[in-house]
Length: 59
Image 1 (cartoon, rainbow, N blue to C red):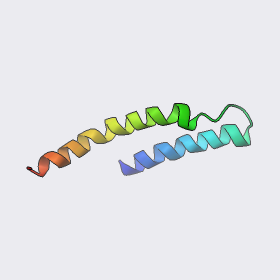
Image 2 (image 1 turned 90 degrees about the vertical axis):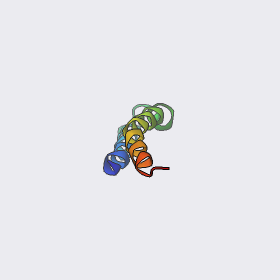
Image 3 (image 1 turned 120 degrees about the horizontal axis):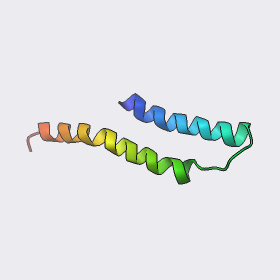
């Protein structure tokens, strides 16, 4: 899952660089439009995992 988390950000960055710098179309949208859905996805992905780890600690 860590690979998926890092890979999602890398994939968005590659798409941004390709469209903005190499093709010359589009705007710089990564941090404005790409980062909030990515953070939401990572929260949905990691919340159950971190919750399970926290519950196993028996605090």
